[in-house]
Length: 67
Image 1 (spheres, rainbow, N blue to C red):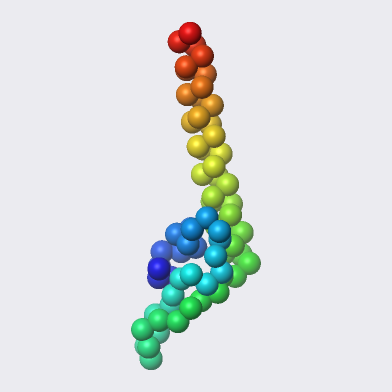
Image 2: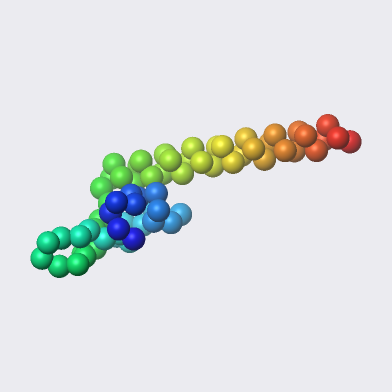
């Protein structure tokens, strides 16, 4: 995984060094997330969870209405 993909592609654990940076002197090196990057990733993940939850709740309502 490379830096241009950002922290939201690192997986659900919010990893701290799963991505890489490209430098002129070598191909890549491990990078560590800043606290802001971790928070940003978690907030984006939480937003995705809320959206998914709303979708499931809507589907449940639709199924109940069909009964």
